[in-house]
Length: 313
Length: 110
View (cartoon, each protein chain N blue to C red):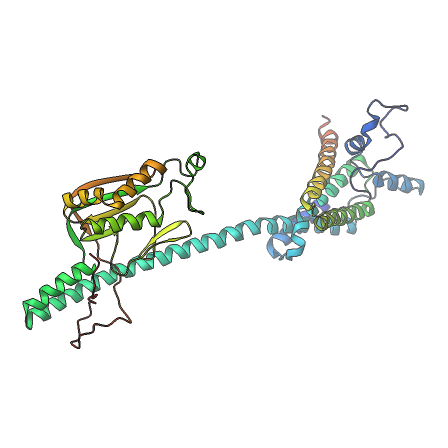
């Protein structure tokens, strides 16, 4: 059998003899007008010449086997061609569910950690109350507060940073940022670092970014497209909460380099920066302050809560 | 009617057994399916025309599948596999439509 169109010189059976007006389109004509395999007609003619009926009938074993093969092919094709997309989707869904499960595990364990930490703290307080001095207890409280091991509450300011409205749009041509590989109008880890440092400079006593308490072990860094604080990826908008004297924080931050940097961010790149005083807010404790290698130089063993020798504020 | 039963039996076997198609054969499957459909509709039309021949049917079916797969293979080697696949689908699709139109004329006289 000859599949598909074939240029053939003889006129098609249905055409009138002579030159056709659409003779130049023989390819299309042969495709449109002779869809049936000419082999059927030829075989029928042969059988007729042998004195048999033109058709062999459809009840022969060959036909049955062939139709079974066709059905098998159709079913296998349908099954096999549907599978790749679903398997890719399944793999993707599985990865997503794994990520979510791991994240949930981390959340669960960090809340567990916090409750255990609270237990440890209360037991510590009991032991200290039973034993000797108030001095150790107050020192411990002050140190763990400063280290970020305990949630803090107090007045402060809340800074919100968000990407520019049309980040990556027209602004790309209007004001390209000088550093390579940076996108316009997007909040970078550097912006957060500078602003957080400005807040410390202005006298902040405790800072958290999107609920991640900053401690002496915190890092604000970039990983791919996301900003990581305490190794947790953050989503915008970025909410920086700083506990401290509200007036002092506002005026000190506005006067500092970080303040002018924030203004430049909003003026030049359209990054939305807002700063609001808050009467009372609560910052969570840092999830993990475990220190493995560092040790306190004094010979007296300190209780489990680590007391960094140099606390952040 | 008997070929139809055979077709249904083949479909059932394929669905229940669900053989794993080797990865290197997967690009040819859609084309093979289209070619098989073309052969089937051609056969139905031949039956209605009264000129059906089992040998022609089997040979045309096998040749259709093999040639279509070969064209796609050749296109893959030449780097125009998707374009040639499209060409095969268009040609066979036109044939299927014409045959179905002819079958329709036979069955419904319209």
